[in-house]
Length: 120
Image (cartoon, rainbow, N blue to C red):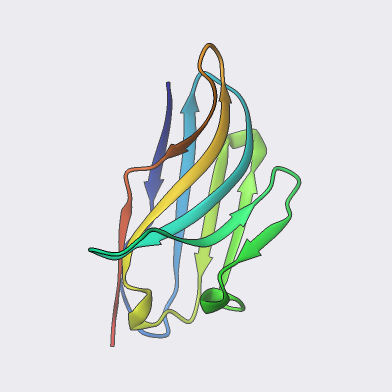
């Protein structure tokens, strides 16, 4: 069983910054891609940013130039630095990891979600 624990969400004014962290733990053999997604109530979960084990990144158009994803493979942790936040960034953010776990094979694990609220 692999667990993802997120931290760093909260309330910030428009134009401010937040840094999200997500640490994976458990019987992990390896982690391939990691990423951040967000989901508003009643809407689908959308990709915000992803990063491969080798460091290649991909961003949603709406966050390019404002958000930066990074990871620490030794710590099985992924980060999302969010700058120039806008009210429309307000929602729940989830981290995801494509894991290869001992005795469980390959699957995508999800965090529990962290609320980000940007006030205008």
